[in-house]
Amino acid sequence: MTLSDAALDRLRAAASAAEGAGDRYEVRGEIARGGMGTVLAAFDRELEREVALKVVSVAGTAGDTRLLREARVLARLEHPGLVPVHDVGTLADGRTFYAMKWVRGSRLDHHFAGEPSIPVRLRTFERICETVAFAHAHGVLHRDLKPENVMVGPFGEVLVIDWGVARIRGGGPDASAAPSTAGGTAHGTVLGTPGYMAPEQARGEVEAVDERADVYALGAILHHLLTDTAPSAEGPASGPRRRNPSVPRPLDSICLKALAAAPGERYASVTALARDVSAFLSARPVAAHRETPLEWVARQAGRYRTPLLLVAVYLAVRAALIFWAR
Amino acid sequence: MTVPSAAKPGGPFPETRYSVLRAAGSPDPEERRQAFAALAEAYWKPAYKYARLRFGLPPADAEDLTQGFFAEALQKAWFERFDPARARFRTYLRTCLDGFASKARASARAQKRGGGAVHLPLDFASAERELRDQAGDAADPEAYFHREWMRALFERALSRLAAQCAAAGREAAFEVFRAHDVDADGAPPSYAALAERFALPVTQVTNHLSAMRRDLRRHLLACLRECCASEEEFRQEAQALLGTPP
Image (cartoon, rainbow over all chains, first blue to last red; front, side, top):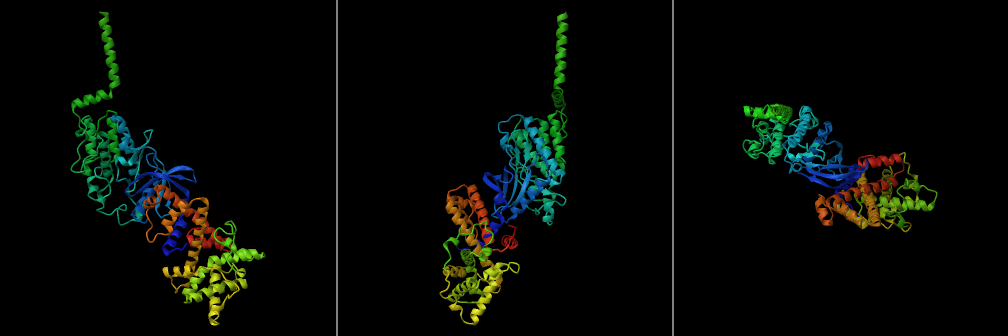
């Protein structure tokens, strides 16, 4: 067998890397495929466990940098809502990969098909907000939040995935790697998904993108949870009540505030958004909504339903006794 | 003398055996003969190409020089005298070849060397084809010899891998590997293209490639170990060859 120069170089590289990832992981199938790469189901021979390998599509491209940044972002964030990274490296064919926990569950947009309960959906939304707020507290913006990037496990656990376009504020691993850009993304570059992307992000205003861009995306996810559709990508977003009239007005207001075109009119933080959703769930006043007297009464009735019922029963029994005594 | 068939891929030197070089100094004549044959098999092609490029010899003269060099090496027990403390074996061999060629040219005896005493069945035509296809740099003979030595090493490892796959009924895995890593001119075919060509799932292509590369590395290190005189030399050569410790 005669080897050309190109084949010799290729085999040398392959033999150099073969002892690493190629040796450790046995690929068993494909879990998902995206624009940046593929997620493979694999078996870790050393630790004898199933893992997921996220692998770039083509070696030696910008995808390598993004994948590494994603792995580093995840490695510095430890939270139940984030997938733990086990390993990072290069496959025998030169493609960059990272190994992570194999998440079993379904995408958010698939998970709630046929689930009518708004409170159940909202409690999941609260967990998404908690995870994103945690990342924000550590200086990380996701920048591509959408239902496809949220996994829901069989016990209702929530995982926010795909941090490939995340941005780290204040000298994170990518900032040092690409000092001339913001988080490795040049001004004018549009990263994200239409319908879930804040207007300033859609315009490529990288410097203007902050936590409130993720608030917008969360508002769009909330819209999806309430209507099973994304808000319109064109023009100002409309509230979910337009698509689903059964959505309570306070929830509609929460969604609209999160989806405001101007960042200054949105919630200042994900925590503030989550607080309002939590307030709605416990029938407390919602900051984003100015309620009418009738809504106030309805809310109080909902909030104090049990004591009101007890009082009603007590009064009915008393009335019955008085009537009986006569 | 011919290269014993047992010295060919999968031959008499088990992969666990430390060094052919050690066997070259064995008191057992049969073991010495086999060791010499293995060394000749490993080094004849780099030596021939080196002679062609470094000394500008025409093919016939380079063939004579190569045959003569190995004949004299056997007669004068050059390989047995190698001292691993002073140099790597391939450096030693190249230095011997330089000296031999210099003497041969000075006395105009190159074409007569080895006449009748020892004749190795070497495929010079294939070496000549490779010379035509590969660009060589005569200005840096050390680097050229090193690269040709690497090429010969990989070719031997590949032959062993092919033999191993044939014995284990894993020809399909080897063919996938060959199509991607060996035969491709320029960019190798995509995994999807290979999957279609060999009627396999893409994930199986990944697994075949991974397994073949792992086995190639194993054979490569075994071939390398056979040509090193000490563990230290082996580790240094492996580091230089693969960029990582063995």
